[in-house]
Each structure stands twice: as structure tokens, then as C-alpha cells.
Length: 156
Image 1 (tube, one colour):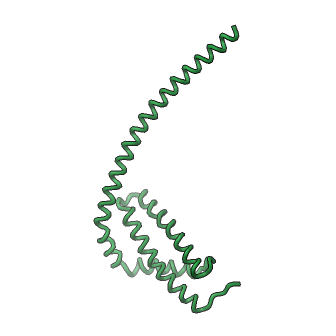
Image 2 (tube, helix red, strand yellow):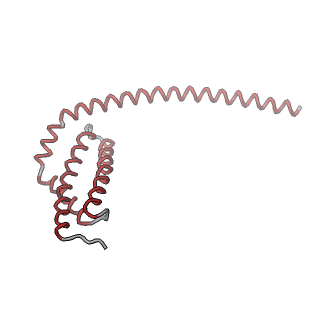
Image 3 (tube, one colour):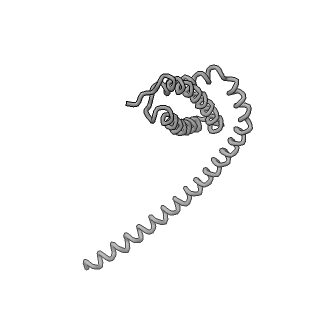
């Protein structure tokens, strides 16, 4: 069985605290960039993006410090680092929010433009789908009448 020393547990715990702070900064940056509009969908998307990135990073940290074994101490200290950052380092969040104020406006403009383009394309595709449906219905009626007449001619 693979055992770790007290010194390596201490080192991994301190690193996990720092890693938790890093995750909190990362969460804040992702939420500021993606959730510019602050609607429900953008918050959900930012959370999903954060958890996908975090799971990959946490896997790498576990490989480094415990040979891939999930240790509760790493998870707890990472969570503690996250909470400590959000409770006691709010001035960093304020600085980052000021830094991303312009970026948020640019992102909101790009998002709004993309959304308008998607809605226009959706409207055009909807019209095209209606026309295709009408065309296919006409073709199916035509095919039905042609094939049904052939069957009747064969019976006579």
C-alpha cells in the first residue's frame, strides 16, 4: 500500500489551500466573462464550464499529490481555500470586477449580436422548413395517387 509522509501531507494540504484560492479566482473570472447578462442560462453555462475545467484540474492535482487516489484532505483543503478567498479576499474580486467591466460590455455586445443572428437564421430556417414540408406533402399526395391508380389498373 502506498503511504504518504507527514511532510508530504502538509505540503499537499498547503498546495490544496492555494489551489482552492486559484479555483475561486477562476470561478469569478469565468462567471464574469460568461454571465455578463446575469440571466439564468448564462449562469448555468458558466457553472458547467467551471466544473468541467475544475474536474480536469483536480484530476491533475490528484495525480501529482496522491498518485490519482482521491484523498479527502485534498478535497477539504481545496474547498477551504475556495471559501477563504470568497470570505476574506473580496478586494481582489473588486479589482477583477473593475478589470472586467469593459470586457463584460464587449462580451455582452458580441453575445447580443450572435443572438440576433441566430434568431434571424432560425426564422429563415423555419420558413424553409415550412416550404419543404409543403413540397413533401404535395409529392407524397402525388405519389399516393399515382401508385394507387396503378394498383387499380392491375386489378381491372
